[in-house]
Image: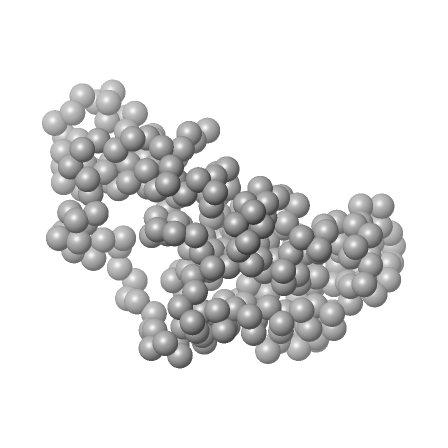
Length: 259
C-alpha cells in the first residue's frame, strides 16, 4: 500500500480554493494555505486502504468494476487501468442511461459491432460513398462513447469515479441502482454521496494516476485469486468465428442518441 510520502509527492493534498469548498469535506482537511484547502494525506491513505480492501474482495468474488473519468487528467489513466485489469471504462462522456437504461445502450453497442463488421468484411466497398461516410462518422461517435463498455452485459458491481462533481449523472445512476461507488473526492464535492470516498486532488494527473493504479492493483490481486491472468493484447474479436457470432444479420437499431 502506498505511504503518505508518496501521496504528498503526487500532490494529493492540494484542494480547491477555500471559497469553493464543500462543508462535509471538513473532516478530511488539514487546514488551508494561500487561500487553498489542504487535504490531510493520512486521511487519504486510510480511505484509499479501505477502498482497496473493498475492491480486492469484490473482484475476488467475481465482481466487475466500471471506471469513470472523462476529464483530461483522468481519461488516459482510466483507460490504462481498465485495460490492465480487464475492467469496463467510460473516458469520453457519460451517456445518460448507461446504467439505468442499459438495454438501449446495448442496442447502440450492437450497431457499433455491425458497422465494424461491414468494414472488416469489405462490405462497404459495395456501398455508395456518401452512405459509407455517414456510417464511418457514426461508428467514430459510437466507439468514442461505448468502446470501454462494449462487453458490459449487465450493471457492474462497483464504480470507480474521478471527479464526482463532473460525473454527477454517473454517480446518480449508480446510487439509484445501489451500486457501490469508490471515488476520488476533492474539497469541492460532497463525500456523503460516495460509499468509499478518497479525499484527494482530482485535478492533478500524478494524483489521479497514483490513486487509480493503487485501486486497480487491488482489483488485479482479487481477480488473480480466482485464477485470472491478463489476456494477450489482441483485437476486440480474436477470431472471425467469434466476431461473426457477435454480429447480427439485421441492421441494428441506432440506440442511444449521440451528440
